Image (tube, rainbow, N blue to C red; front, side, top):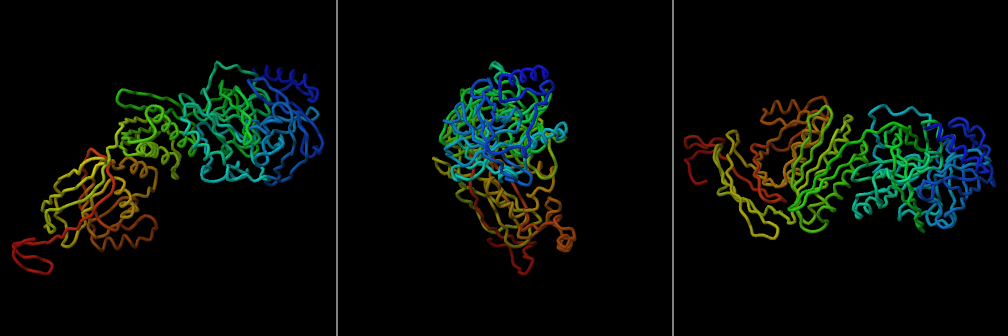
Length: 609
């Protein structure tokens, strides 16, 4: 197959006078021209696909060489493009990697453009020698995950980000955007993702198909469309660029990074170009992944490199959406990527809910998430969300455990499968904690306190929840705090009370915290003593003698022992029919009496408390 592709490529070159057919007998033997040989005024041709799979040519006129423009020994060949639709479109997103030849020699790939609303298709060409160096890098080890670090929160190092609407500097040299063709996603999701990813060189566009094998295919040779698939299945996301150079079963393309992930493992596909869509702002190729071709193993500043015939390991993901009279199921595989994978899963869950149910208005969502992690028990999280923004909160709550696991700073995790089960009700079962009342204010250890909590449901009448709370026998004389809170308020208050317990120290501690998240329909009652305590390696230790607490606090090992502001004497949970919000606090007083004598200072018989 590789030999056949080389022969086809050589025949194609024979039909183009400007391209030499010299050394076409071996894969990767096309002659190359170094940057030092290139001079202003030289002309040549480029190869790319404007529609379908047929490789067309366009004209190239060299304007000069920009030395060290992207860093030390990182040059760019400046050129004016013409021919085909380029006079109307300018440099097209999706042309990244289009090979350019002068005097029959390969000089590099179209990869950069200047500013926005340019009047002429002026492009920056990445020299082929820099791209070949990427091709020579060793492949990622088996099972490697693609991870560009915190690329979603920072600009990519080593290459300028593509400007969004707020960054239209005329003189800015930017990588030609990579069309990120998304199918199965709600238009609103694509629009929101576009705002986030366009400054990073990715252009999310609404497309169709998720790997359509029925589409025509052409030879996988220089100038052919090159796809990088991030999701495949009922949801699909594919980055579209162009193949620059092929040497046997190894290829290189784009001329700039895609995710800047270094050694990586992303599915490589052929693609079919439906059309070039002209735009005064940013013209782009609209394409669809067609046939799997191999694996992208390098994602670096001068381009991406792949190996034919290899397969990428993806994360199997299932989404079930249920409501009265309707049930939808979605299946997909997601790129193993610390940052981008969880983001795409979150977008897919959002789209599944929107397409199956609705976007706006009152909603209650019961969400169950199951994550299978190699070497660990499955993590299962169940919760309920409600309100005018219940759908968005449900998506965030259901997908956050996956994000925190994959992005944890402690050790690599291998997520083997993810499943989401979402049940939707078109009403908001929400309530605010309005008040807390005790039948009296003074108690003794061992007494039972009757607590009445008043709830104010959304669009409903006040409701009261009565319960009994036993004062612990170890309660000391003085004032205690009774705190009644929702899950969200409880989480915020607990993080302040015992920060050491809620700051994960290792992967096991993180999994433990994720698995014990409080349910949003639970009413949490806590009796708190002002007496402090400590957390030791993330676990709270209370009811210790003052001397022991002092010794622990004076530990010479930093980070192991952290202070706890209050001690929880009693904690109980009551399940309600509503998603709760807010918290209320009351104070109670503890006396210690025995046979009519009040210890700790005063005497007297039992009287009214």
